[in-house]
Image (cartoon, rainbow, N blue to C red; front, side):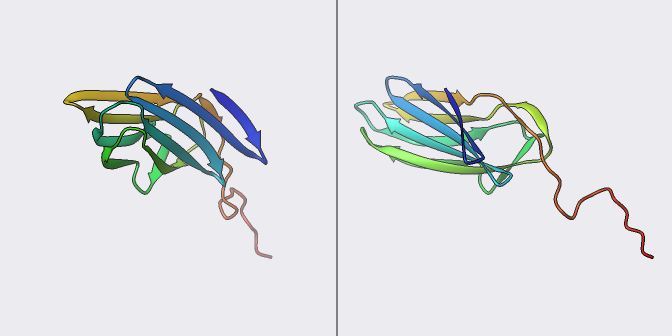
Amino acid sequence: MHTAYQGGISIASQELSTELIHINAQLTHVRGRIRLDGQIYNNGKHPIEKIKIAACYNRADISSIGPSGDTLHYLLPGQTYEVSIWLEPRASAENIIIGLKVRAKSNGDSIRNTVYLEPFDLKIKGRPYQNDRRYLGL
């Protein structure tokens, strides 16, 4: 698990590997929004079918911009699939945990893996037009 800061953008990544599937997830904070990038690798000898990829997060703290997951019909051995999910914080929060969940089938067996990224704190700054000051017209 890594946490690094590059040019004001915080990046966290995590990997989870089993004998059939390898998941790599990366979290990037870009201009007040959060981008969850995921890569899924088929490490097995058989195709993986009916793949469902979804972001795991607390819906009270974060909302998705667009779809919060993806569906893939199959992934052949040795192939990679990449997905990007955009999230937006609703309010400032502490210890936010975001994960990437993958469900699939291979030779009739069900595969379920979830990788969680390192918890982080997020403080939202107000919009320039949203402030508590009242202007007095003189």
